[in-house]
Amino acid sequence: MSNLNYTIEVNNLTKVYGPPDSGVLAVDHINFQVHQGEVFGFLGPNGAGKTTTQRMLTTLLEPTEGRIVIFGHDLARDAYPVKRQMGLVPEESNVYTELTAWDNLMFTAQLYRVSRAERAERAQQLLETFGLGEKRDVKVENFSKGMRRRLSIAMAIIHRPTLLFLDEPTPGLDAQSARAIRDLIRQLNAEGTTIFLTTHQIEEANQLCDRVAIINHGRIAAIDTPERLKAAFRRVQSVEVALEPPAGSEPAGGLAALPKVTTSVKMGDKWRLYTEDPSTLLPLVVDYARENGLKVISLSTLGPSLEDVFLELTGQQVGTVRHEMQEDKPRRRGMGGGR
Amino acid sequence: MKSAPLQRLQGELAQAWVVIVKDMKVHYLRPGMIMFGFLMPFFMFFSFSVRREMAAAQGVARLLALTTFFTAGAAGPFIIPLERRLGTYDRLLAAPMSLLTLLLGKAAVGTLFAIGVSIFSLIVGVVAFGASIAQPWLLVAGVILGSFSFSALGLIFGSVPTRNPGDVQMPSTLLRWGLLFISGTFIPLTEMAPAARAVAYLSPLTYAQDLMNHAVLGMGLLSPWLDLLVLLASGILFMVSPVWMHRRARRLGY
Image 1 (cartoon, chains in turn red, purple):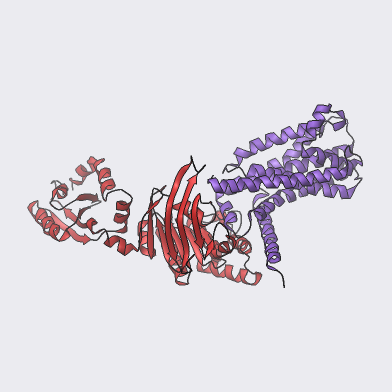
Image 2: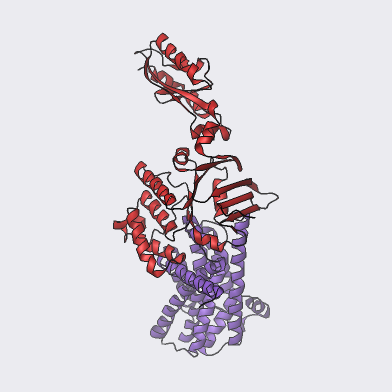
């Protein structure tokens, strides 16, 4: 029996590309629920099964196994009423470049059977909201990537969906456009739209989502609020320090050898030292700086970020990848010592 | 007050029309459509008809069969893979309409394109070559049903799950060329050997050409009713495959 408090209920959902007995397993018996009115983030590395899951939820793919219930309707049996209430913004802005912004909106409105009386008013309102009012009669082929993205979102919500799927809405956009789109997502959610956000941009999920699910190798690794997930990973707390060595001396590479440091990562002109005990490590860092004649530019303690949680859950130990990358480039250390 | 199924049907028809209008605006003037849908039939006609003894009416009947056949079949293998590549096909598949509605809309895009080019061919035939039409109603029915059948045939190729139109345009063109030479378009059925004629009867183009002969020349080998029936039946049959292929692609994730 489905629970009407849930907008989406996913049970045992599985997808095998190709024949079920010999194909490629992309999503492996996952379960989750999305509550009405929440922003639900679906995070995972490339190839983890995010887009496959979203394509099953939007009826573009048929599950190999399992059940999807949206708005109380079993998607396998009764997709039509669900489709009328959902909007989809895919990863690529799928707008018709040969048409004007206005024609794109009119086409989508007609496709979703928005009444003739409401169509024009709603389209004009969306163009204004999305900053495209002056471009109404311009062919989309002349639009920037950010403008196409905004138009794509406008097309997805012209029929006032109560559930909106967004697949990687901001990658490739400039900071201003990305921020505008995040603001729009917040606004839509505030107006009551349930948002299913697929992304690999962890900070975006951290800023926008009420809850996140982290998927890895086709399986759900964790589902919770960003803050609770972070709280569960206190072992990845860190101390971030920027030290300035005297001219001609070695940089602060010895920080990694300090007691209590589990992993160290050089991040630009700073070092991030991961530790389970930042209060003990802090004075050790200060002592190290004093003993080596290094000037402390900045020093702070950090809780685990959602990115740290993500890396832990997806099997990449925090700092490992970045540390290895840094070790691959030993010359940078030498260059840093010249300051 | 309308019943729910009637309302749904009315809505689906309206959505199919929206898809048709959009495709006309977006795709009709694309080079691929002009090349394979407009120029190809005329190229074929002139290649095999110039400097041959043929009455004007006979030429018009042949040209009409060629235009319905080539023009209608050009849309499916071109538009659907292109839309897949641009990501716009997902927008249509996710919309609240049935797969059949979407595919009927796509079939109608090719059908209407072929009807338009056929009208152009007819005007050329009548004005430039002074041809007359023996049975206009058969001409109208033949152009509509022939265009529908060949457009549905093109949809089969468009339903191959690829994002590159070139992957399906080549095999689609090869099949159409093959059908062209076995269907009594360039060699009349009466001049064919019995075995070749038996093969010709397997091709829907045979019936389209025979129907055009009835319509323009006033005579054909088969019954015009049989021609109409075969074109309608083949159109319906050709619509079944794209539905099955789309469902299979959705199930297997291609």
